[in-house]
Length: 363
Image 1: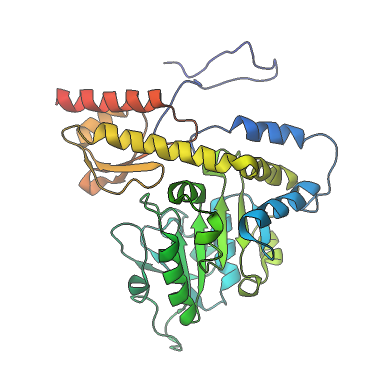
Image 2 (image 1 turned 90 degrees about the horizontal axis):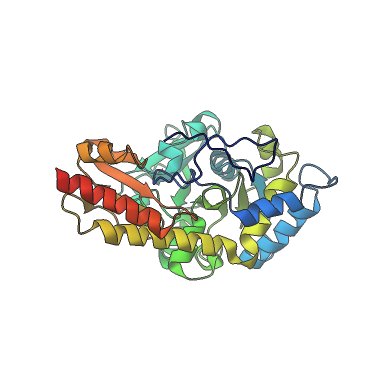
């Protein structure tokens, strides 16, 4: 199918180069922008506003986020998730500090060494079966305090939801935070898919973040219907000094910040973030239910967010990828990942499951 599509509804100045009916299950980054977010961008566009975060939209965003997390927080909108994670961890650590994380963590696997190359910190990775850390697993690397020959483990980073689609409960986060703080360490949460966790847990987001002891949070938006942008939310300002300067130094200070902030206001007000994430989660649950009965497919992880992980014969996977794009997760064991988005439809899921069934039966 030709991906170039003309549409008479488009502005004469606009050109559509893709097929808007094309869907895949590779990443929630593939989705477009939620119409309510686009409307918010348009509303923020007219006239002039003060640059570099002194605009009324960024001020309003702080009020909105205080409604979620309570008074006394600090917020720092940034361009992307890698920037949010690197800046957050930099703010927690001295130059000799190290971060304990799961081996599957995004900061370890998917950020091209940015935490170490740009942030100047050592990552101490711990293998996990489900992407989740525990106090016992953290202690595999949280040692050597005072040893000048070892990078000092002074922070822990956990991901909510994890890269394997699993979700920490509020009790699990609190147990980690209490353990980390008892050792004089600090806790960062990578919340690229925080909304999916909140939708899955069905509790206020504050219960498994600030109230549970998280010091600093990377609050994701791009995977949940934004054009671009994430927000660093500092829960404990005493634990994370210097972000005002680090953000500029690391090229994450947006001059027209109102457009990042306006998107998040639209996302967070009226619970659009939860509605969109809840829908994506529901589509993943539907997909899991549809494929579990197909011979040759073995689901490998709990489906607690918007991703399904499964073992699928490589030949069948490559054939189905001719219609629906998706990624290998662990090629050695033929494990793949299927991601759903805020705009994934039941028809999309059913068509994908039907293609998988047809190919595997044909084998």
